Length: 448
Image (tube, rainbow, N blue to C red):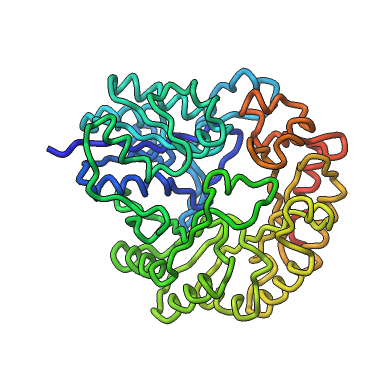
């Protein structure tokens, strides 16, 4: 009989959370790797709520979902952790109920190993709670914890209760883990230098596929001071664009998926090598799908040709990282974009047929030393260029170049307690950019 492995995507515990095509892509990649090696696999995704199975279904407010695969999570209000008691906002668990999770764990065939992922550093209470429940319901089974939180806050994650921590990319470390815990050698292994050697993520484990997240690359060639991309994926690697198109066709033709999201950090970098041939291939094949880019595309790469291909290929949700219109701060944070890049890109996108409200421009709010005036000027500038400003609250991330300045600037002990790294708190706010000023700035982003 196949040895069975359980993979778990934990809840989100936070003041606010919204599903912008969020999928546990790394965990699904591990599931595909394990299946290629003959393991029986079972996935529990705590963020996917099946409230219809609850006897209280008609009494519960249902989350609003959209056909494109995004929308609200089901949520339940929880007691706030002690460090957050003074924050006058509700703290919620997003995803399935605890009863649902326990029921799924009781129904699953007992696994020989459990793999658990993690996301934001300040979501760690949900990880701790998930591990506690796993240990109660399936005692004696080793729990292996990986993901972004573990990679960025390794010492803190020692307290999670897992039997082993995995930092960085797990696919290349999995053979050693399987040998240590299950005494098994792996017949199939990936070539970490060749992303096309990785099997497609195991999306077929879901009963219903609202959308598919696709990665064309890992890492980023830029080193923006506020970003942890290079800490999570130190090497920038990219797939063959035709093979990316093959994967899109696979999920579309075989499973009926019509919405795809890209969570790459550098989808448009070197467009001649990836974006242009990919878009041309999507168009050539007549793939009738819609594509969404919530993670922030690079403005400097947009040309008239690329803009026309994007709209023809079906790119509907487009978001770009601009961060600030302040020239000095642009240079200080990495120099990936200039005001001229924004002006030219928006003009090309408008000429191609995108409306101003279609072109979302992320602006960071709450950087160390940033003022409300700086953010306000950026909002005005984005609107003047003909696009829609979208405020992205800054979250200080351990290990990034801005971390030390954030520790000094923050009124919270962010180095000791990851809960204070939560962007909902504006962790580096000051009297020059207070929470009240931030609320006013959010109102100013609305399109007139």
